[in-house]
Length: 161
Length: 161
Length: 161
Image (cartoon, rainbow over all chains, first blue to last red; front, side):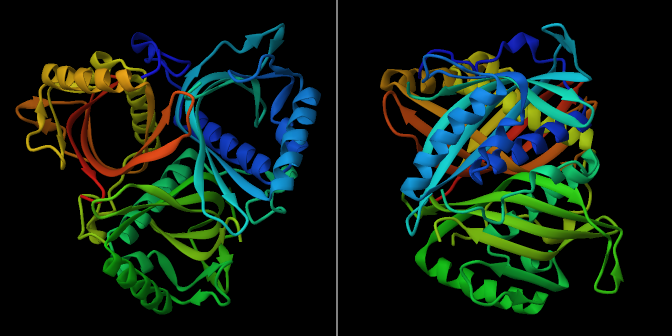
């Protein structure tokens, strides 16, 4: 057992929760967002972040900051993957969602939600056998403008690090 | 990265969405339906398709067409599996659900939904170790009659093919 | 194919269902509960059972009975895991939830739900590769007091046994 990581919730604070409507929207946002990534659509996937969004990982010294930086960095990763002929599938599940303040960095959103979740990546080489590539936990700050959800801040923590 | 497959959504069209009530019903329909399959109940599983339902896979030259054909074909597959003493578990998740026209092939349903999702099959041999057997994406046209959901058309695309 | 196990539903009875609100609460209860377990918080995890809760597994001769017994037993298991430096992640999904009588053992709850689901455990050793450790099915009787859900009875059936 590694020490408590990002996905270790405070047991006392799990009372506030979002509506079923918001929860269903968040699950579908995640599903659509990951389908874009696994289809190789780096730019459309990056559009799921706010313009000033941040994507941090415990295996990277620096976070990717801003939608353009996020798109460019992911595009490079996907290109390397394409050369290897590997199909990845990002599964994101076990989502806990809690209301968050809708004001952040001087901007007011229609709704904000903080999530904690698990994510696993499956990998299938062309003509080969599927396997588990990676197990992670994640923490997002999601914000909504109208009917559209965005990631304002994401922290992904790889297991085993 | 393989070229864009069935699970590659059009980024521009992800606006229309179903209610939380419909989304919860769809998730539970899928859970129940897969539990039937993994319990070996081929006929009850096939009852989850409309009478004229279609089950297509990218690894089969011809789709299975009609509930009877679907039941018979799956029954044969399950019999082979039973001989090997293997327990499969079909996980279906990462579901995006969008409203679809409720009129199809001259029939009017109470509701229709188009879904895109990921599905993985885990396998455990008797006395052995669990593993990932298969990673796929899927696209369904679901229809509702009263409280009951059915699959009118399913396309499963195996990764790595 | 093993003989029909706990996750084999009666095809005829899948009509009664819970509201989207209850379903979203149940999914989030499961996510939060498993995040506590995987963070090593045995006691807080055990608080997710009623005081007289039961945790039965098909691989154990006797169920764990009562919150204190459940906490002590899980604490021992987590300590062994910590010595090995392995991070487990319990994924619980494919949940079917049905209303159940809210009176049980002389106590009246605000709501009761019976669930059938799949659960998989992923494992990542420190510095090592993620893999599937275990595939199971589960059956819970959940009860609600105010906004708080609890497990009154859980049966986990490991595949391949």
